[in-house]
Image (cartoon, rainbow, N blue to C red):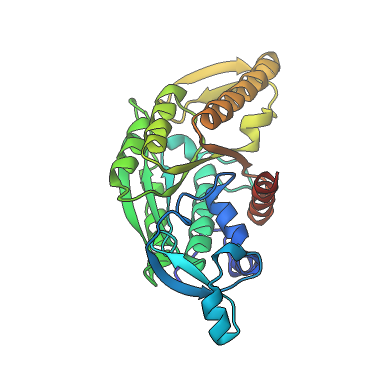
Length: 304
């Protein structure tokens, strides 16, 4: 297999494999979040049968086939046969940040993107990816090709050198270009630290939702960015604009944490108002632990 990013080792993949085998519904929950998947049961055009897996909806069992074979098979329709999922990853300069001893935000995003794609492909559906900061820099259309995972890994591993600042950073164009590239209704994961002006982000999300795509925001932050565990006088340099500012940590810590909390709450609330899902990941949390907790939250929302 193509070299995997740090922390996405064979052991982690084995755990994810076991998870996907446990129940197809878990993977569908991963893809569609709390929403009903827009790809299941929409089309009336029959495509093929597949064997029943515990947890499948018995309403889709073909009882005529069962009468002939004494085995349970489900009817699949054209839209069911190939779900499309695309993961869009922020490659702006702020994604370079990482505290000592942890993955930086881009590396963590890289791992999540590949893990999600691997589960989609493992489920027999189509996965693709895009990368960008001020524009969509790279795009790999969703596919079920046997070598698609290696293609995705290669795409994600070629980007770190382009993680650079921009004076005119707006993620809106990345999201609108993504909408233009998608040829059919898709599940779209947007992975970013979202350290940017939020109104253009919401406009991009709205564009994706208007066109019928199922959108989930994966918000990645470093623990330092949440807790601000600093003291003394600090010389801070902006990763996006290289501006420098000198501050007294103890003076600004409480206000900083309050603003970050408000920012995350605004991002989540307005995203959900637009019909998108939102999940916060922190880079000091083990990838496997974070993903399993995410799957459990999805299952809980789906059953409530």
